[in-house]
Structure formats: C-alpha cells, structure tokens
Length: 334
Ligand code: SAM
Ligand code: DTB
Ligand code: SF4
Image (tube, rainbow, N blue to C red):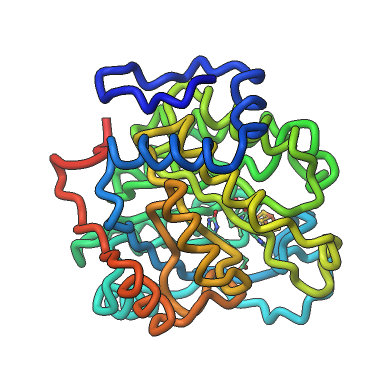
C-alpha cells in the first residue's frame, strides 16, 4: 500500500480486504504512523480530544462468561454487586462529570440484555442526562430493534456494543453468546437511528492476525462506527485472562494507527488500560490517530488515570477537550 494520505474527496471505504489490513499491520512503524497521522489531520484537529466519562449504573452478577470481565458471576474477583442506580444518583454523577469537562456520559450495565422494567428506568436516566446538555451513551448488552428504538426516543445518542475480538478468537473469550449475536445488536442499533460505538480489546493473548480480522470487521460494517474504543486488557485477578503475557506497547500503538487509517472519520478512543500506559505511549497513540478518552478516576469497576494526571498530560501535549457537538454538527444521527 502506498503511503499517500489521500484527500477528503476520496470515498470513505467500507470495502477493505483482509490483505490490505494485513499489509498495514506489517508496515514499518514510521511509515504506518506517518500516514495515519496525515489522515488524522485531514479529518480532525489533532489538538482536540473527545472526552467521555463512564458510570457503572448496575454492577456485577452478570450471567455472561466474558473471560476478561470482573463483573461476570462465573469468576471470583471480590467485586461488590450493586443494583440499578436511581435516576437521581445517575444525574448527580453526570453533573459532576460535566463540571470536570466531560461532554459525553456513558452508562454501563452488567446485563446480558436489559429487561423491560430496567430499560424504562434507564430511558428515564438518559432523558435526564440529555437534559443536562451532555451527549449520552449506554452499554447494556444485547438489544432488539424495539429496545434500541425506545432508547433512541429517550434521547440516547450512542450505543456501545463491542465486537471485543476477531470472530475466530471469540470462542476463547466468551461462550455464552456468539459473534453473530453481537453483529445483530449492532444492526438493531443502526436500524433505530442510534450512532454506533464499537471496538474491541487488545492484549488478550490474540495473534496479530486476530487484530487484523477485528479491525477488518469493524471497517467493513455497513457504516463505520462513530466511535471506535480500543481497549487494552485490564488484567483483573480472578478472571481467566489474569496473567496473560502483556502486549508490546508498540503493537497497541500500531493497532490505533491501523484503526485510524481504515476509519478516517471515526473517533478512535484510547479506552481501558491507560493506567498501565506511560505518558509517552499515550502521546504516541494520539499521534497515531486516537482522539477520544475516558476521563474520570474510574472506568466501570477498575481504575482510570486520575483527572489531574490527564489534565497535566493534555496540557504537556498542547491538547484540549473537543467542544460538545451541536445537534447539526459532527457525526450526527441519521
Ligand atoms: N454488559 C455489556 C456488554 O458486555 O456489552 C456492557 C458492559 S461491558 C463491561 C462493556 C465492554 O467493556 C466490553 O465489551 C469490553 O470490551 C470492555 N471491558 C470489560 N472488561 C474489560 C477489561 N478487563 N479490560 C478491557 N476492556 C474491558
Ligand atoms: C469500552 O469499550 N470500554 C469501556 C466502555 N466501553 C463501556 C469499559 C471498560 C471496562 C474496563 C473494566 C472495568 O472497569 O470494569
Ligand atoms: Fe457481562 Fe458485559 Fe462483563 Fe460480559 S463484558 S461479563 S456481558 S458485564
């Protein structure tokens, strides 16, 4: 593949072939980063970073067996379960996140899929957070089209549902639902007119070819996800993936650069795992095309860098929060 960045007139491609993605992963590091950074500059201001804050609105006791997850009922991780929070509790957290500079608030629940009563309570939360002037995102497990439509009506902007891994590696990670279930939920979310937030986890012991296949699947969905979270595995004691050989940090940066190259207009989020990353590694990820982070001292149940460390890092890099999108701006809903 040649190193040209192209222009904004070039079509956004959803017809990538596996060989092209493989070739990107095999490029010399500098060639790959040079092109990814050029593409990034074509579509985004490289000094801006989109800021989301996460809140676990229902914690633990999840029936699924995702091998990375501290919230699965199948593993002893010492996590304390918590029932669904009240609307008032969620609004308090959202207000605090807004005051610290977050523009998007992402509500996560440890469900396989939500039941109707739970969905109604969550719809109320979404309306209340949206009324604060924040973008809203939810991640609640599998959804039907009707459930996705209900969330859209309540004011939801984004739905997060990750593919997590390549289709072939998936069976090593989760047995309680299949890859097709994930793709079906993404289709339901698109059909309801919600924006898609979809990515995966790197560092679960997968091969380079699995990362190739994961990014290929993401970049050949009918539309690129508006947000693409690239998580580095957070190793939690008690989960089957605890003790996995840590990934070479440069391989993680490479994955960000390939995601940016394949999906030029998407926000690529440097997601879980930043606590274990050096400032220098994060700076390289931003250079490679990452332009979104989770901000706040906690992800869902595990630690995230504290706000002061992030503020310092962004200041040292001359970066600032991306302004909140208006209804007519950015990657708006269809
Ligand atoms: N239960 C819902 C689901 O699985 O779709 C929503 C919440 S779940 C925690 C959301 C995502 O968080 C997962 O799909 C996975 O990508 C990510 N995640 C969970 N535990 C993680 C870990 N230990 N390290 C990195 N990412 C993790
Ligand atoms: C995503 O891709 N990463 C976030 C969010 N979407 C929901 C979750 C990361 C969770 C890390 C482990 C934890 O804190 O429980
Ligand atoms: Fe449950 Fe989601 Fe964790 Fe899987 S990732 S165990 S579905 S909370």
